[in-house]
Length: 82
Length: 82
Length: 82
Length: 82
Image (cartoon, rainbow over all chains, first blue to last red; front, side, top):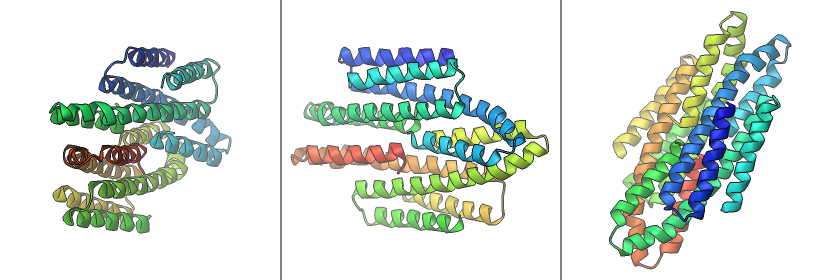
C-alpha cells in the first residue's frame, strides 16, 4: 500500500509540473483520472482488509452494528467521491 | 490550481503517515475521499478552462470535431475514474 | 425499496418522453443525474442490509471469506459504475 | 437513444421483480451497476451531441459563456452522481 501511495504522491507532483509547464489540459486531465483510479485501488484494498479483519473482529466483540454503520458511511463517501 | 495540487500532494503524504502509524482504516478512507473530492475540483476547473478557451479557439480554427471528441473522452474517463 | 424502484422506473419513462419531445439536452442530463443519485440510494440500502444480515450470518457459518470477496466486488462495481 | 432508455426501463422493472422474489442482494446490486453503466452511456451520448451541436451553435450566437457554465454544471452532476 505504501508503494502505491508514494507513486500517487509522485503522480500528483508530476501533475503540478505539467500545470507549471502549461501542458495541454486534456493531457493533465488524463493524469488526474489515472490518480483517481490509483486512489480507488488503495481505497478498495483498505476496505477489503477492514471488512475481513476489523469488521470480523468487531462482530466477535458484539460491535457489528456500529462497524456496519461506519463501513457503509465510508462506502457512501467513496461512491460520491467526497 | 497549483495551491490546490500542492495541498493534495500534502494530503497524500498525510495518508502515507496514517498508514505508517497503522491508523484506523475508516479514518484513512475518509482522507482518501477528501483527496478524491479535491482532485475532482481540480479536474472540473481544468475542464472549465479548456471548454471556455481551447474548445472555443478550436472552433474558430475549424477543429470543433476533434476537440469535441477529446473533450468527451476526458469526461468519460473522469466519470469512470480512470 | 420497491417504492423507490417504481419511482425510478417512472423517472426513466419521463426521460424517454423528454427525448421524444426533443427537450433541451441539459434538462435531460439533469434528470439522468437524479436517477443516478436515486439508484445509488437503493444500492447503498441493499448493501447496508447485506452487510448487517447476510455477511453477519455468513460469518457464523464460517463463510466470511467468500462473503467478503463478494461484498468487495459489488462495492468495486458501484464505485466504477458498472 | 430511445432503445437504450426503454432497455434501462426494462432493467429497472427486472430489479423490482428480483426484490419481489427476494433474490440474493449481490445479484440485485450487480443489476443496479449494469443500469448505472447504461445510464452513463446515455448521458455521455447526450453530452456529446450537446457539445457538437448546441454548444457550437451557441458560440456562433455569442452565448459561449452561458453554454460553458451549463455544460460544466452538467458534467459536475454526472461526476458526483446527482
